[in-house]
Length: 114
Length: 114
Figure (cartoon, one colour):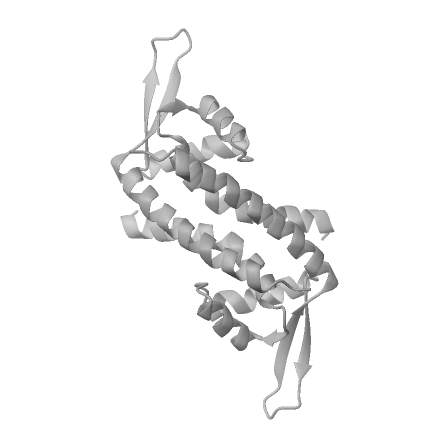
């Protein structure tokens, strides 16, 4: 496998696990898909529409997000928000993330291959 | 899907991407599989033998690790070390991890769903 393809695959693995956490953290206010995408990208999260939109549908199916159509504008938009269940899970996932981050920082600070 | 199963799945996704980075960081000194497993677990990384051993074989096949049999002891042991290619990739992956961590910390600090 070419060097860059291998690295890209590993980076994708690294990012993938964080996306659910990033989505839940970014939906403090209800947002429609495209606004959420722009918001996340503006915050430095490298995510594309073809990753985010299926993820939103999956999280809704899992009961972590709620959706509601806003039909007051000329173009109806589906707004997503975090459900009560989603908030509980977000707190636990965030705690896990903090623990992983601390472990990794300690590891990366101490044991670099030379 | 039951609550805990869903959470566990998300936590597994979160950890999976970090394992390659953790393995490369933990092989400053060549180690055989079981010693590496104990070392990683002692540092707080939740990884099991049935995850680590296939991962070591995969990383070797990808050219990121080298292995060597030590037959001087009564029980031959396969020692793994990071290849030159693995070191280059480790540096790039670590830089990516630092960037992701900073982005996530900023996000989690500012925009928590209430």
